[in-house]
Amino acid sequence: MALPAQETGDADHANHLAALTRGLAILTAFGPDRTQSTLSEFARLLDLPKGTVRRSLYTLVQLGYLETRDRYFVLAPKVLQLTKSYLTADPIAALYQPASERVLAEVGSFCTVAVLSGDDIMMVARAVPTNWLSTNYGSEYRVPAFCSALGRVLLAGLSDADLASFIERLDPVALTPHTVTTKTTIHAAILSVRRDGYCFIDQEAELGFRSVAVPVKRYNGTTVAAINIGARVEAVPQATMTGIYRDILSREASLMQRQLT
Amino acid sequence: MPRLRGIDADRRASQHDADFSEALSRGLTIIGAFEANRLQMTLGDLSKLVDLPRATVRRSLHTLMHLGYVSFDGRLFTLTPNILRLATAYRSSSPLIARLQPICDRISRQIEGLCSAAVLDDQDTMMIARAAPGQVTSIGMGLGYRVPAFCSALGRVLIAGLDDAQLADFFERLDPVRQTVHTVVDKVALREAIGIVRAQDFAYVSEESVLGFQSIAIPVRDHQQRTIAALNIGHNIGKNIDQRMQSFYLGILREHLAA
Image (tube, rainbow over all chains, first blue to last red; front, top):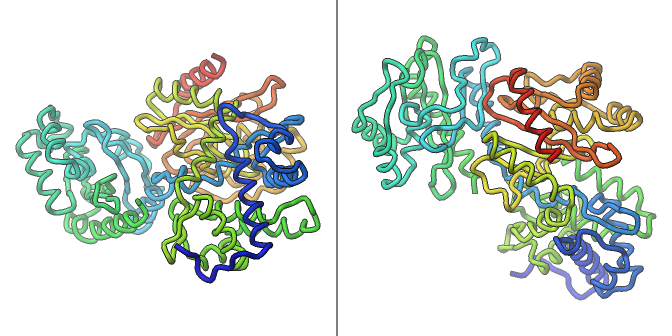
């Protein structure tokens, strides 16, 4: 596809093209067989006069992409800044934590983002009210997936076959007196989460705690994580959890979906 | 993006430097302007972001398209995954990575947790090697990720490894920006924290850079005993690493680094 209003053919343009091309050729020349090179070696490799290559090397050193070791040039870690758009696409840092903190700021309750890890859920981002003194509640790193809202949302995102095999190997152990441990009931509950698009759970994972969760999906609809709000039962009524709180989570999930390409 | 503008301003100030190639510098600045959540941009977006005239940006983009680093759909420019060749070049040529990546892999497997290595890049800590359980690291996911050095364990170890003049300079230029409610932003307190890191030869930081994230880090030194990188174990579990666990993790970090 042609560039808009592109000027071609002028000498300045050709020079520009050459300078950038040379610089990138030098940076990509490094590898297991070339961990360092001298000016002469680069001149030979690029088949260019030393003066021209010296200018490229000098510029790359000035910019911090190359370092010198005596006569040798080596790649500097700063070159990773050029690839950060691909490699630092760490959704945890880029999306999940800010989303959790926005939700916390809005509702004042715990907000957690979790992913499925085996048959458990693993928390990958979390925002906790600052006045929260007890460290026991809502801070578990791994929680069985079957009895938590985050877990059921993640399980609902599995394929039918994966879900069936999860249910088959499941050996539900009650975590509280409220934990449902009948496999058929759990399976049915997960299927309704799939239909409803959210999950509300009251004290099944932790006594005194309730939670509402929604899936975080990629652009193609695959569930990649789940986001929840957790609150003390006496602090937030169920209707608020499944009403306003659920809407807030859905908003955050759709904001993230646009970026989870 | 004040950072990009800053670099460009510096370059303009040194424009009389005849050996410096503006064309190369600008092309790389444009590559660096793409972000994970901003992989596609219009000419106008890019031109505004790097603070360069549209004609200049268009010329660089044309070259980058020609080389296969950028694609264009009639409206949006996209940085292509070809750019990963640069990361591959670095990862496969750097002796530091050859040494540290396998260590990260082994530690991560042993503790079933996150292990990273980083270097200091001006005022930031930048990841150069990393291993996390269940994650494929062969393409280098997470590398190049930066956090302010003053509030991370990796960063404090790296700062502690500066010589006194560099340390004074670091603190003079430091403008600590709060990252979480736990971030220490008082320069005197931070200076003291660095003194402690120097004395005990490790850093432990809890939730100062990311909420719920704890990290313990040790220096990686060259044969002249200069700190060239830092290695850490981190976790997201939101629980303090108590003293017993700290000693346990320190033992693992030191043992694998010495091996």
